[in-house]
Length: 439
Image (cartoon, rainbow, N blue to C red; front, side):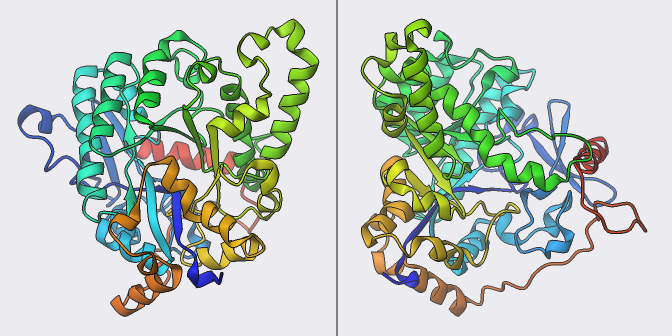
């Protein structure tokens, strides 16, 4: 196989939603009370919902921007590459990056639906959350059939409504939902509580995957205010191991042996050691911890391989150890338009690490595992040869997709006139605080 022959499906990308999300979904009072995208006097955007103002900031939409201007900017849609918020432009950006399919997480709604989950008026929140899901499935994904994997957010404050929404989404062809990897940190019951039983049953019945996105619960620590922020960025994927270990020890996985858990934006290189350590800990301690009540004769590593999938952007070490992780348990991601995204060079970055795999393994990692996991089949809409890296890039070039980097003079992380130095955790916290106050 050559690089241009690959078919790439990214299972972790993001939408910076336009202000029209609810325009075609709601009317009357429901529309009047829905989240609204507003503009401040300085031109920055923020979302206004039930008394909470949320500004779009940070490294969540910097694809196509000169790297010198990465930081808390941009803060308005007109500072973004159009593909961040316009679905037709997104297709062009996917094509030029050789990406055949994409699963997109929310932004203003919260990656795990936190805007609605934390809203005080839950009746309104339920209406607006459903409308958001309908917009995502019908307007965003539906505008280009076969190119997007739909993803739903859930009303996790009400398990009866949550189970109902999982089934409603499945009826609409959506077999992926998102939730926090550690809801206990948000004041909800832990995943070991019986509270979640209706969700486990619903996702198992519908063959829906639960996506646990990095940063929705457990986070990598800022070791000190003086720690360079790259130390925190470096360890972010490894923080996923906390949640993975927690979920791997859930008794529910033994009651629901077909439940599918997707670790999103997770990396894969850390997984062999986690499984090895889990098996060792279980062997050493299960007698007094009584974990055999639910593990039985299974090892934790076997539970992981049965239930979990992970994804990677650039993980040569993980691919070299694919046999230990499981070639059926790994998917690919781009993370567009976040700062880690290798746009528009994703195929080149991936090929450096993947070219040593067999053709069958490349096919599994790049698209077949994602298709199975999310019950998504782009080949119902396109021929395979139309979705290869080479074919998509040729289409994008013919359409004139421009990859010129954007420069808008975004705010620098250091004080004006300050000499260049490593940006620290304290700098980033200060920037977040500044933008939160500005919103």
